[in-house]
Length: 294
Length: 276
Figure 1 (spheres, rainbow over the protein chains, first blue to last red):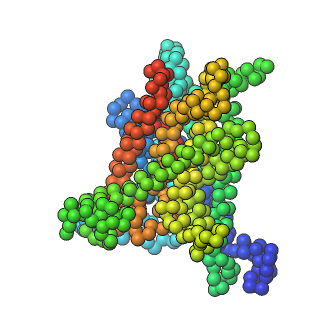
Figure 2 (spheres, rainbow over the protein chains, first blue to last red; figure 1 turned 135 degrees about the horizontal axis):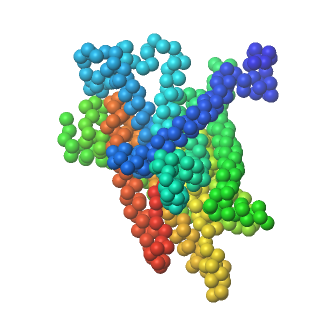
Figure 3 (cartoon, rainbow over the protein chains, first blue to last red; figure 1 turned 60 degrees about the vertical axis):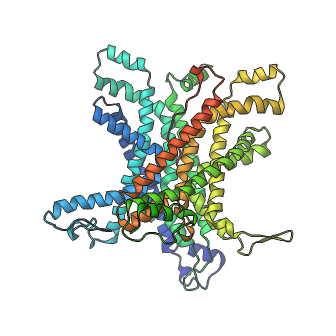
């Protein structure tokens, strides 16, 4: 990075620190914060879409679909989410390989599960064993995103289903009496009104999502926890920048990062809540109206 | 080949070091998976129950501290709750482990006595401390919210009767707080038990492969390459545990609400809300 970093053993103090904090691995560490933000940016809308689908399915009058939606909603209630994280990553991987196996090697005679092994034909390996490392890590990251979206979709379905139920029945009946079809009632009356009921739950969900991002580490993605462990560990004289066990400081840094992130989110979300409450027939909306009238 | 009964005898208490020493390595049977994962559940119950009991006491102190007018009491309580609720439990585990490892191995000399510190890095103590502080913070916030939403009329009635100070707190505020907070507290308890599955994935080593339910499930999934058996088994155990908790907390909830007319009683609704 800097020119005086050429011989790290010769420099000391502040210069040493500057060189140390700008090594290639540290740049990777800083970039992994981007991984976390990318995960949040992709997962949040996808999970919301999953949740919306789940909540709509649960409200369906068509019994199998309703049951499916209710099952999806109930999924996260009794079972720790981390079990789903560990489960879906392997299950999705094996499912994808099984499907490609069926397509590409239809006349493969050996069974796929042989005792303790899961063996598909070489052409069905996803990603292909000869593909570069970046494809492999992108695939892992993709699996992690789908897993997060499934689990958080179930949480979001919970929130949105509750919010849809909370919209006053009279509003929907009024719309029906004007002759709107169920589809119109849903699109024009229910969905616009449900957001204010869903917002506290969704804000909570966003906080939970932020705090769940370190679990990426368990899914085999090189995220901030991975780098904090990697960089913080004791480095002997064989390394360019020897130092004792500094993992405590790295994790302290992560703690501060998460505290700042959740605090900022909290402030932004409370502003949004206030804004959305304007003109709503809720206690918060009434309070805003009175404050304005005074 | 062992029969199922022999497997249960050998592995039912494997997670606390009683029974067979070696874990099964090949020919995994359903019976082995059920027994060993169930055995691991002992740790989840231990962590959950201990943290819940200790955390309950501390949470009361935190809620009262946060309500207090004196900033010397209020600020520390606010900061404590903020730090533990604002950061992921996963990071807290790592941080605590790294901090506890740094303690001198030989023990610390206090007033001529040598206090041993090595036990703190073991999961049974170190992870329990983190879970205890974490649940205390979440519960403290719930109790604080409940304290704030005690009906004004209740307090005015207490004043009118001349009930003040400590006896007002003990006889009016605290029982009402508990009643109002109970449905949320039930949720917190359930998700605390779920959070105990993180312990052995977050720095704390499983000494002699004595781990919790998810640790063994993960062991089987790694060995058999088949996630479709062990993970549903853990899920099954946790559903049972959740139902048991709902039953227990529901009984307490009925007792807390027994003086109210039936239409104003608060009911427990299970809302998934907390991953730490």
